[in-house]
Amino acid sequence: MNVPPAGQKRVVIVGASGMVGGYALRDALENSAVGSVTSIGRRKLGISHTKLTEVLHRDFADCSALAGVLSEQDAAVFCLGTYTGSVSDAELRTTTVDYTVEFARVLRGSSPGAAFSFLSGGGADPTGRSRIPFARYKGEAENALLAAGFPRVYLFRPAYIYPVEPRKEPNFSYRLLRTIYPAFRVLFPNQVIRADDLSRAMVDAAVRGTGQRQGPVFENRDIRAMVESLQPQRP
Picture (cartoon, rainbow, N blue to C red):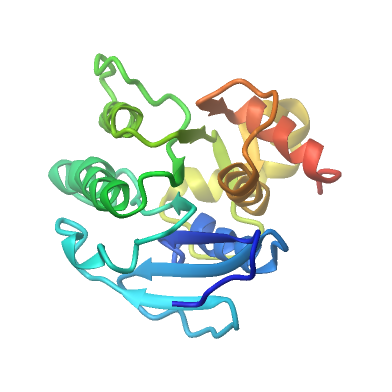
């Protein structure tokens, strides 16, 4: 494990092979307040950096083996997830809820003072009454994190996340939204967020806190305001 200089933070990124997680990893590596970054995922990223330690972990149903890796960490940015419709309902719940809860359990035991930034989603329903599985499961994961005992938990609920870089979209809805994004952004600015802006807000919150901003839930409008306070928003 890399040992950061005094005053700099140790940050864990989970899900860096995904869109938002990939940007979160870049942000953490470029952040002067971060001295070391541990990326935990199921496949190699193919990058190297003096700050980066990469850990392969294939079974997030049991994170016990990560106890040592997660020791003495200051913050975690959790972006592991999957798209609705790409997996069965059972797998969606396992990935969204069970993996999050299990990782949080081990992190809390190894680094009880760590901050936790969680990639939730717009419409997340902590009451469990939503008819939409994604909303129920994200709400269930949020509840578990808030009850886990971390001193700081940040729940990010983005609306449509604009990919920024070309990619193979997971379904027709995403292909359509990407096509109409320029107009959609102008007409409904609080219903969109760039993937790189979202990741920057998540990393900054975990590392520096959110100051006077109320939490722990940050809806799309709140995330955009956080980004504006960091630097001018990009088109």
